Structures are given as structure tokens and as C-alpha cells.
Image 1 (cartoon, rainbow, N blue to C red):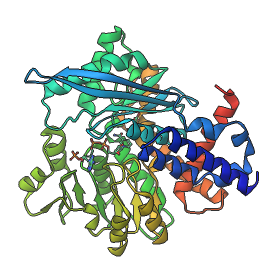
Image 2: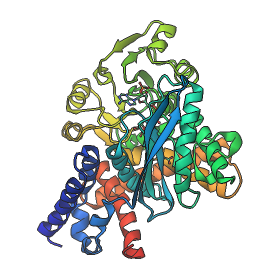
Image 3: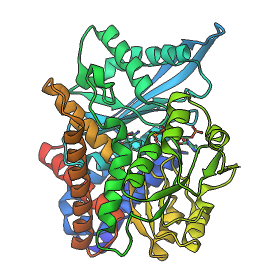
Length: 450
Ligand code: NDP
Ligand code: 2IT
């Protein structure tokens, strides 16, 4: 296909997203980022355009939106909006997390569902792409309020999911506690013990060892692979993570285990810098057990500094791991990191770097690990949990962790080889988009226009 025809097909697909989804800026950003990488693929493979792949892949198979009423502790009735975006089932059952955060809307979940298709493809497992969630804000809610909300949310969602249909998991605001309540309500509503319907379950009732750790650990395994042929090493490096939730905490723990000093982390209010290296057991206790704000870490730890309302990307580091949320690292932040000598940025969160930031990272020669590849360890381990559930067995921690390590190593090798093959050596973002896309596109061609 000629360059002009390929560019026109990609341009038409993006135009279609903009026209059909007015105001959905995150979804547009995510689609643009993928389509931008695909020109060389489309030129070589006109069958993708002829088979309508670009037109089909940008339209979710199904968008489900529902009312979630619940009663708060004062007896007042609250109503939230719930969603499940079932984006693509070409590689397997729909798969992707649930996000509970006040910012959640259809735009957010479409961007996340779209990215999930390619991420799940890269894992090499049989997983389609989906995302769901609600604008419920778990901050400051009592245990009982969280339970009642989860029950109401699942009373509706249960009609749309199943072990061979759609398998949710956690994301921002949805951790082990919420998954427990959601799974309990699924059993109650359906009357079935169907463990493979949701992942991230507790170890005692069908969960997988190492799922809790998987996204953060997987991110650091991916960084280790990125550094293999460089003069940079995790050992002795200075690392900054953003966020202090599930992904941030276990990324920090694995980086520290591999000899790095993790000097700073953040939450939505501010960041803490601890020059001796963060006390990660204390951080776990404050965030996971006590469910307090990060400022409480500084109060208990002493001898460290908490900055309210300031950017964690001002902290000097060798390696930066954005692990909080989308568009948290912008062009200015990327320039600040570069000026302070940062050599590596790898995305634990989904789409944490803005398009301008990615351009700056590229121009400054900073090594970049894109989210679809670098944070795929979480969903990959969810895939391993589904496999264990289907076999009604449970592997030990070491087995799951070593499978995770192997999958992350393979994802790195595939993305690097694909970038080489398409003449963009070292561009792991392009490699991830192309490799992720090709597997789904080939499956779509093989299965016809459905
Ligand atoms: P958690 O809810 O455990 O933690 C989220 C962290 O990010 C908190 O520290 C939170 O701070 C901070 N944060 C959330 N929203 C904002 C915001 N708007 N501005 C600044 N800080 C914010 O979520 P996870 O750790 O599970 O998820 C983090 C990221 O990783 C998300 O992008 C998610 O999509 C992605 N991800 C998660 C996977 C998983 O397995 N959990 C897998 C792959 C990717 P605060 O408490 O103050 O809100
Ligand atoms: O963004 C993600 O990959 C996740 N939140 C994990 C999804 C999953 O199904 O484990």
C-alpha cells in the first residue's frame, strides 16, 4: 500500500474516533498514540485496511452503563454510575480491571479498555480487552459503605460477566478488599462458585500467589531487561516512584530488592522524600492496613520531608517510575527529570506520560518503557490466576513469580525485536504498539467480519 493510502486510512480512523466520541479526549489520546505507530505496518499489510481492522478496532464491541444506588452510613441514598466497556474479545474472554475513582467516566474507561487490548495481546495469553468501574470515591468511606457499594455494583455487573465471557479485576480504588466483596456478591446473585469470573481474589478463596505483587514486580523485571545492554544498573541507582498504591508499593519493593534506593513516592496530595530510602514496610502499613494519607508516613518515620501539592518529578533520580494515574508526567516534568540526570522512565500506570512528555523523553535520549508492555505483569498474572482456577489448583509463589518474570522478559524481547524489524531500534513504544496490534489484527482477519 502506498504511503499516502496508509496515512489516509490511519487519519480516517482517528477522525472517526473524534466524530463519534465528542469530548472524549483521553480515548482520542490513547488511539492517536497507537495509530501513530502503525504506518509502517499498514504499508506492509494492506490486508489490515482491506479487512476493516482499523475501523473495527476503534469501536468497542459493547458499552454497558448502569445505575448503582447505595445507602450511606447516615441512611441517605447515593447514586453512582457504573460501566463495563467490553472492547475486544478476539483473543479470549474480555479482561481488564475495575476502577473506582471520582474521575471515572466513559472517556476514561474507553481509553483504558482500548489500551488493554494491546497489552493483553502482548502477554501472549488468550485474553480480550475490557475495563470498567464507577465514579464512586472510596476515600473516607467506611468499611460497610464500601461493601454496600460493591454489592450494588455487582448486582448489575453479574449479568454481564463470567469465566468464559468477561473477567474483571482491580485497578485504582479496587484492591483485595473490594474484589472480596464483589466476588461474594457475584456468588450470591448467581448461586454459582465460579472462581474464574474475577481475578485478584484472596489466597484462601481462589486467588493466585503473587497477583498482588505482580504489576509492580513485573514493571521492575521489565526495567531490568531494558537495562541489560546499557551502562545503567538497578543496583546502586536512585529511583523515584509516583503514587503509593498497589503498583507503586510493589515496584518500590522489587527495585529495593534488586539494590536500588527508592527515595520518593507520592499520592494525590503531595510527595515524601526519604534520602535513606523509603521504609517500605512502614509505607505498606500506613497505606494498606491503616488506609491513611502519605503525610502520615512522614509523621511516623521522621527524618524525611513531605511536600504538599508539589511534583514528585522535581526529585533527582536515575530511574523514574510513574505508577499513579494518566497524564501525571507532562512535558515540564519530563524536562525537569532530564535536567536532573534521569536516564530511564518506565510506566507502571496506564498512559501516565503525556504526548509532549514522550516527545521530550525521546529527544533527550532517555530510555522509555511504555505502559502496555511495562505494566502487563498484572494482567498476565491474572491470566495465570484464571488458568489455576480452571484447573482447580494453586501454584506456589515461586512458580507464579518465575512465570511472571518469564512473561515480562518475553514481552521485552518481542517489543525490542519488533522495533528493530520496523526500523525503529530502541523505540519500545512503537514495538509494543505494533506487536500488540498485529496479534489482534491477525486474529480478527482469521475470524471474519463479526
Ligand atoms: P491504587 O488505588 O492502589 O493506587 C493509586 C495511587 O495513585 C494512589 O497513591 C493515589 O493517590 C494515586 N492517584 C490516583 N489518582 C490520582 C490522581 N488523579 N492524581 C494523583 N495521584 C493519583 O491503584 P493501582 O496502584 O492499582 O493503580 C495505579 C496505576 O497503575 C493506574 O494507572 C492503573 O490503571 C495502573 N495499573 C494497575 C494495575 C493493577 O494490577 N492494579 C495493572 C496495570 C496498571 P490517592 O490515594 O491520594 O488518590
Ligand atoms: O490495567 C491493568 O492491566 C489492570 N488494572 C489489571 C487488569 C487485570 O485484569 O488484571
